[in-house]
Length: 262
Image (cartoon, rainbow, N blue to C red; front, side, top):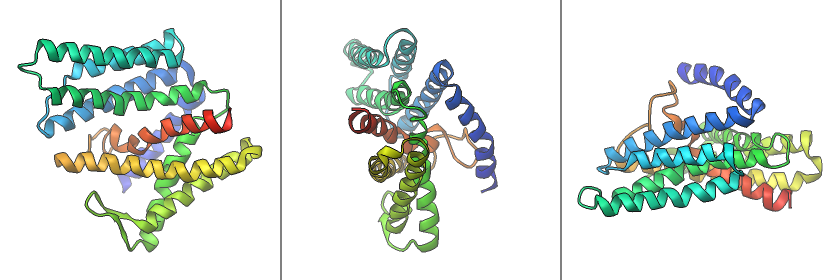
């Protein structure tokens, strides 16, 4: 517990600085996080007996984020995703005797699951809405905190014991409340006219966040590992810290663009 608290104390000011500065620093930071997270995912895949073509995933990640410097954010995504798929298919055709199709699919999935989903945070930053990127962390961490406190205090019924034995139904409900409370405060301070929409965002976002957490737990349980990495003492690796954020980021982007900024 002491290591977790220390990591949080050190990490929060760094995160605050990056989100405050935004722009190029945010892009560089997300690219770095994506590459490290992708490395953790491919290492996890090897633990499960797969042999991903890692360099194509890293190349696709580079194309995706460097493209953000050069062209419109959405355009960079439209270029990087099909280009990475084409490269992987060419590698599979040329080296089909050593590269199995399942390895190609795992490589492709890792690129989408880590790099492309995290990239949505840059698209949120492009929206004409002050501090919108904070919503990803407010929802995810508000949900985590609410779930932990509620589950610890009154958790009885197991949510998904085969995937994550410690999670409870009561904790899941507490997570939704924690996320909605965070979005309520955000709306009151910055966009009071959209309070009902932000409460809905907090509710649905918490559900999505918990699915992200459970999905990562399922991947780890499938290959028989406890953590994706050891980068953060007490927290595990990048993917252990960002697992719920991976699905929350694209959900927040779509919600804001469709329902708030339409």
